[in-house]
Image 1 (cartoon, rainbow, N blue to C red):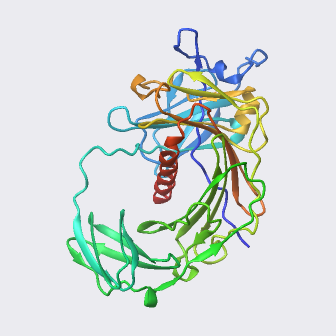
Image 2: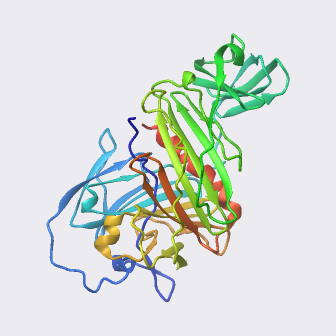
Length: 426
């Protein structure tokens, strides 16, 4: 069976160190572990293509090794820019919101990676004026729920009146029965003003049974809580199919309702106070590339020996042995800031790095974007790899012991939001 390529995740990486006075050291060497033996012989520049999959960054910079920060060239129509580096490098993209709100990603890579992917999305905030909306009404024949845009309404009555307000645009509506066993999708609803949708939404005539798989999941971490989630991205909708915590079943969309360009993604997440394990599966359409959940999810074992320390404006993660998995990601979040650092395996090999932190020394980076670690924050170091046979992306993560677990829900919502925004731009 033909399967999709590996998932591109938004990761985090950077190289800043804390001096005794608490100031940010500008030296790139601080992130390398021990750099005493690095060859300083000049090397020729090589072109590397950077792809930004998000919005236009407020700060878009790169540095060649420990050199000065430089502007990344303006991207072409496909989001591609070319930088010129000698070996290891860092690319940073930052999108600012209101006040101290910010989301920034720094990717640490090497020429051996051949290319680098980065994303930049403005942080989600509740400030600002809401988009003007218009009323949309309709009827649903069975009790259940119906989603249109970001609005979801529900009722146990049969039939019942649907009443939502959405901005003008084109939408795909998704409906479910009360037991969450059937689903309908009605596509191409054009809302140009107040609208009464006809005919009634009817799960009997336009719905189909949801799929479901309950894979075996050996090797779960002790005392694990689980969250199971499936997302469906259509041309004009983002639908959370849900699944419920601890059920063990991953829900999937009915194949008869899935269009060729629909994208579907399922995630199985297990976590306790210290560690996370996850498996992500993806598919497109209802044919050979459709989402498939394997009978067994072979979760990775947690990485041992991870520690965290103070860092100006963020946190630093340390490791003693780097598992040969894939990119290393450090994600540090507060209520309004998210600083993400990504280190590729080739960067770690080129630099000898044994730690990772977000580099706050880029030109234009403001102190108000620093994460105040005296207040609630969430820090997670993760690695992932893709199973070549099933194309499942497996990952493990370790949380900073000082992490505020109360923010875990916010972190999960932001992950979903980022994936939704990435799909909307593809």
